[in-house]
Image (tube, one colour):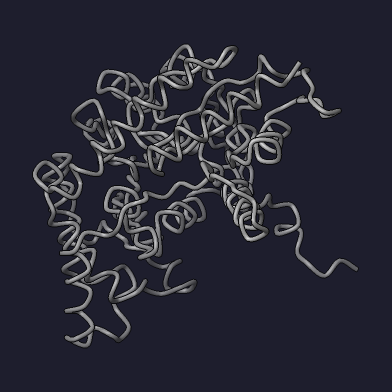
Length: 400
């Protein structure tokens, strides 16, 4: 008899974490591996946030917090939404969790019944599909194209909606593509959603502050769908606080209460000290904070450099990302080619070829629902990025 449950046996391992682990393993063996696989800013948490955490320890915030988060943190999150997004929420609509990943997982568990359909435009963040499958839902993948900046259209969504459709899940700025939706594009999507009264939208905005084109746009701004949008955010990416593990939702009250109920049974509240640090982060205005501005401008400079280097590699098709810190180049022109007896048939072959031959860790595009591409993170130094792209170019040139 099988020891483990079917739900775990049928669940895929996170490919991004797996590639990062493989790169670390090779580094430990003495290999000069450059990792472009991890989605983590290479910056430190702002000093004022760290000071708030130290103060919280001195003030003995070391006991169980309320399940959905401290009241002052939920107030600060509401302040953030009003300041940055012009969205009005009440504290009871906010649930703070142990990272945005837990926020998304709980949302899907609270919304999706077996047989419900969930529309996920591809490419998507790797865990979306696994969360839906764990809840017994059916993923309906809608393929986007690099020529359209990997963005789904309102017409594509309309065509994919059936009476079983319960939820649409997307991110903007996007992981893995770095693309983001304009206000007009979101309005068109909102108009489609508004026609289907039992349809909800999950908007993953964790990369909101790493935006190179100006004001971030939220689909929750449109009144006709605001009561059916669940906005996911947190502090990992925009505030370089990955290890603090703080994410949150802003949701219709019934959904927020359901997530609170589930969280009460699963983890209870997240870390008290991290919450107090996040209060300070939420009060940092991204329009004036030097930490946020400097990080964004550093990423912009790296983006421009990597884009130039990628466009110089024959056979690679690439768009210019508008946010986050990823490229998602199409490398399928190399499929069918070989080197030293190894034939590249798909993105998994390509990722392992680059890891073994170039000592550069990337992530296979199949993990994100698009097997023609690979994902590169440019959350590392310019020198390492230049060397990584040099190695990739040389390794691809060897394929015949």
